[in-house]
Picture (cartoon, rainbow, N blue to C red):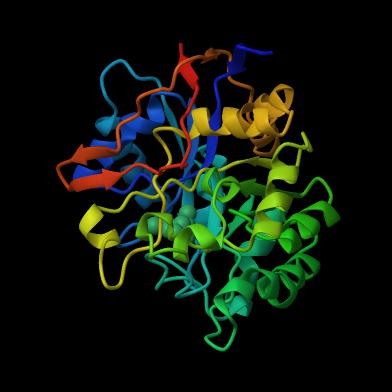
Length: 346
Ligand code: NCD
Ligand code: ZN
């Protein structure tokens, strides 16, 4: 039985760090284990231009605890007014690693997202030309579509048409939650990748709704039925290069989660690696954990692999905090519902 594992330091290819007191309070949770992360731009107001991204990157670096070595990989929030030249400039300067597409109204802070996809055609064409990936929040916002079907419908109605209309566009399907998402990711070539979160490998929709409503398991895209969770586990542990970790760790202060209209987002930065080691061990795939956390994403983003390593050791249950206290309020850490036996150290 494997009790020790050396892991190339991982990258989180989908992370929400927020700003101000929340950023300061939670960034150490990611910097402790992760070398780099693709930073989501859905601030209020969003990170739209190269200048916005420079300023946000500087605030992130300024919030890092002393002695931590963590590289934020910046993204731009795609709006109908985004200028292709600004995107190309941000990419050429090495600052920006992706552009994020939120359909307007799909999730937290997405009001400035895209309504009319024809209006972003020139940006997408420029991105295809320069090889800059588009990270896609893949849910339709049509209120007549059932929330559990919004990912599958998005693939047919929006994602596939965009990819056909813009050959060569590199796309990351963010936080896929369905077997349809897994199948579509597999149907693409080297230009198509998909991130999978930690929590979607653990919870299905029963965890949110059975026996009482559990706001800390509510996120978008919402967790689906068990067959989909199984498809995600199979994909994540398959070793296939197209699938990689993006935690979508998304902190909200507890009062905004434990609320009559609670915010979407699970906070998994703190204990993600211990949870993933558990999942990969259960699936008999510990030898493929590193591909998922540390290699496939870097390859997709054409980044050099990290040259430092972590140790994972199986032993007594690891004591992670239930909450992270910040000056913006307490943030509940995702509870996987089982003891975490894999400890992470330098
Ligand atoms: C994210 C957030 O809180 O910013 N929430 C979530 O449920 N995942 C937004 C997002 O990625 O959809
Ligand atoms: Zn997200």
